[in-house]
Length: 105
Image (cartoon, rainbow, N blue to C red; front, side, top):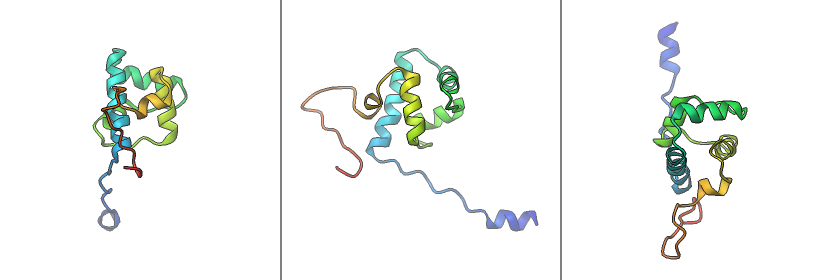
């Protein structure tokens, strides 16, 4: 029976990140480091905010191996002390810098 169950399981498809997801991951890592937080510190802040994400989950977010849903996104902004918009945009505010948005180019 165990062999049948294994045969029925399908491997999870690779997560495909668009430019917005990539920017969020980059900003989570940058802001966490800027605040001198370990992934464990950030995990504790998320737990305290009522949206627990284990440290390995945060590491996966930063490595583009775990997508961030909208609830995680809002909690990450709170835990990092920024507005949600700060997680979406590049660090530099420059007219020479273009911002690629998923679905809009």
